[in-house]
Length: 531
Image (cartoon, rainbow, N blue to C red):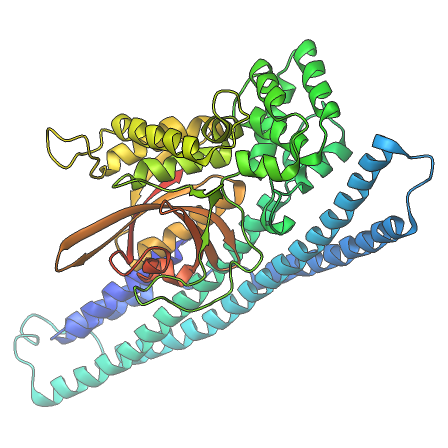
């Protein structure tokens, strides 16, 4: 959370450090020096008036979008023209439905963005008042002490002088606490605003697809398609990153490839089939490869497409708080299946296993290789498990993973370099973003990285996280993936074959056991997609 005077976290750290100096000071001059440093920390910055004006404009745009939604829904309710029959009528209905949902989402986005900006403006106003009061206490303490002592004056402190110094320290300490509270208030509000604005910017997905190859109506429908099996708004098939990359690749096509790809889209038997073709293009495959993929999935129903191409479906009740199990894990956990086999690890292969699933989420061609085999037509869960096993071992080797003994072939974990290596070799080529390893050993570091994590997953880029804990048996480590974000909640894929939601506070304050178990509560590192 950067501004012209440094980040809010930097200001908090400075205030905390100088408050410690103040508490440890045992002379008048040391107290005055600490007060001077505290007064030198910049006050909260930002323009509440400007933020209020932007928020009011967003409110007005939310009203406009809601009006558009009402008009589109009236068109849908009154029926489409009778001359629109067959595929034309179906596509027209898709466009009208997508337009109505898009307008509704736009209205909600503008309203919530306005709310976040109003809250930020109020927080800055309140924090400035708190900060001002804190500085008044600091200046009062400085005045109580008068000027600095000379060398000889400072050699001996009389009882009365010590009592006055301690009173000044108490007054200055109260001021320092107010400065910290002000910095904390702005920090919290700025993070909330950043989270909301990043999310809604990513959700304006149709606008991410900059191409004239397909019409604006088709782009709108593509952005609206959901994965079969869960609520549409929680299971968008094409992410913002998919749409941006696909549009960019379409613009680079020659005339022949463009015509071939347009025919594939036109001949698709469902919106989902059409969207998976676009997702394959976004994953980096050329038109010949997309054509081969199309031949394997053409005409399949949405349920088949989901089972074979989308490893994770988010259930409508997945965020409901159902309490904790005895081991500290969430009771509300959803297993992700292919038939009667889970998308899960075997043995100590959490890193390659989470990477396999993350790649399958962004690369439907790869997902079909795992689920459907060479022909793409298989429905055998046991064969899927065999292919998953082989992929887990391949990635374990690729990441120079450890084994239980030097002569063993049983995997036993992977270090951070290996984790970053396979994220970059397996996921990055299909999202366009390389991964960078970053340690987050304390609450402030985890809080700082949250906006970047949430922005990445909102755009459709999974974020590997490393968790750990210690008990009588020593250290326990594990890798999981952040794959979604809603409000102040993070969706976590655990390679034990399950997904669940944790709060931002859980991530920051050492409660990641909710996504695994009590052995591994602390997130200590992330692999963050670079811009």
